[in-house]
Structures are given as structure tokens and as C-alpha cells.
Amino acid sequence: MISDQEIALFVQQYFLPFVRIASMFMVVPVIGSKLVSPRVRLALASLLSILALPLMPSFEPLPLLSVNILPVALREIAIGTLMGFCFQVVFHVFVLAGQFMAMKMGLGFAMMNDPTNGVQTTVLSQFFLILTTLMFVSVNGHLYLISLLMQSFHTLPVGQSSFAPAKLYMMVELGSWMFASALVFALPVMTSLLFINIAFGVMSRAAPQLNIFAIGFPFTLICGLGLIYVGLGVFIESFELSLNGGFAYVHELIEAP
Image 1 (tube, rainbow, N blue to C red):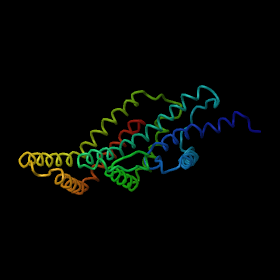
Image 2 (cartoon, rainbow, N blue to C red; image 1 turned 180 degrees about the vertical axis):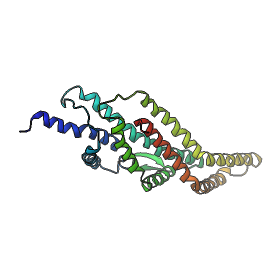
Image 3 (spheres, one colour; image 1 turned 45 degrees about the horizontal axis):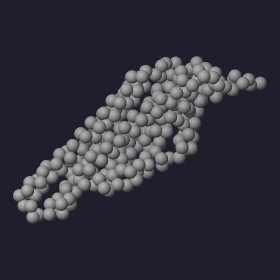
Image 4 (cartoon, one colour; image 1 turned 90 degrees about the vertical axis):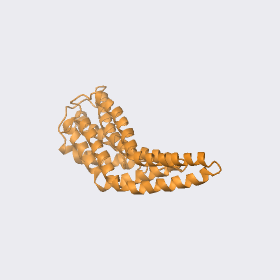
């Protein structure tokens, strides 16, 4: 005869790890995009929880229907959400860089719907987002992130350690890192286009009868596209630096060696 306590303990063994895994899957890039149904994400989280439970350390059982389990569940949600959000920031480094370049080139009006996030972005940002997503999947970044998630159950066991508020401040620092990295990536194109605009400004003062807008806009656009094409040669290095920075933040977040 199975008692109610045994059933509650069995459910809790799967419930708390599932909360952390599902929280990450809801916000992590690729899996957490709007293109993937929430039902599919929950099904993947349930499957991973079942498969990974034998590899997790045992934790102190708590009454399933009590107030004491609420802060533990909130802590699991915070850990999973922050791990996924770290890589949302990594992806948006290149989205933001595309915004910077597009505004400087005159492509700010060329907006399109981003199906992964449900917002309006420039065409250039969407191009960099697709390129970043393909490279992230090609280097198995999603698999390494899942392995770090499993490692977090050993470094931050379920219900056995507190979640320091200082880790929330790390997300603020991650935001400043995102803006700095995006600016560094877009700076060569922005600087080159700035000199082109200065040259057209001098031309408009020297020869006011010239229609600088009719000449300068297509010329700036062509030069910007050419500079982006040349800059794609170093895109892999920039992506690698951003990816390593994201993984470093995750390591610090979960206190992994």
C-alpha cells in the first residue's frame, strides 16, 4: 500500500528539478523562442528531468503542500531563468550591434518582425540574429548549456543553499557588458560611415548646388554593406569572445569550477 507521504515525496523529487529546468527552457535562446511551442518546451523539460534525476544528488524532502516549499521553488525559478537570460544577452549583443550599424547606414526604416522574440527589428539585426543562432547550434552551445544546467544541481543543490542577491546584480553588469560588446563590434563600421558623412558635409558646404541627399544616401548604404561584408571575416572571433563571456557568467552564477 502506497501512502500519501510516499506519493508526495516521489512527486517532489521530480517537481523541484523540473522547475529549474523548465524555467531555463522558457527563456534560453533557440529552445525558448516563440517559434517553439510552450508545450514542447515543457515536454522537453519533463523528459530531461526524468532522465537526469538519477544523476542528481539527493536533497532534503519538504512537505509538498506547505508554505516552506514556496521559497525553494522561487529559488529554482531564479536559477533557471538567470541561466537562460545570460545567453539571451549574448545573442542581443549582435542584435544591438546590427541596430547601431543600421541606424548609421540609413537602414533604420527597414524594419521587419522578429518571429523569435515577437518584436520589430531592423533587417540587419535579424541577419546577425540568424547568423548567431546558426553558429550557436553548430558549436553545440545548447548542449553545453544543458550540461552546465545539470552541473548546477551539484554546485547549487536543490533546497540546500541560499541564492545570494549579489547574483542578481550580475545581470546588471551583464547588461553593461552587452552594450559595450555591441559597440565594439559595430565601431569600425560606425567610424567609417562617420568619416563618409563628414566628407559629404564638406562637399555640401563647398558646392551647395549638389543634391547631397540623393548622392550620399545610396553611397553610404553601399559603403556600409561593403564594410559589413569585410567585417564578416572577424565575426567568428567576435562570436567566440561573446560566447565565452556568456559561459563565464553562467559559471560564476552556478559557482562551477
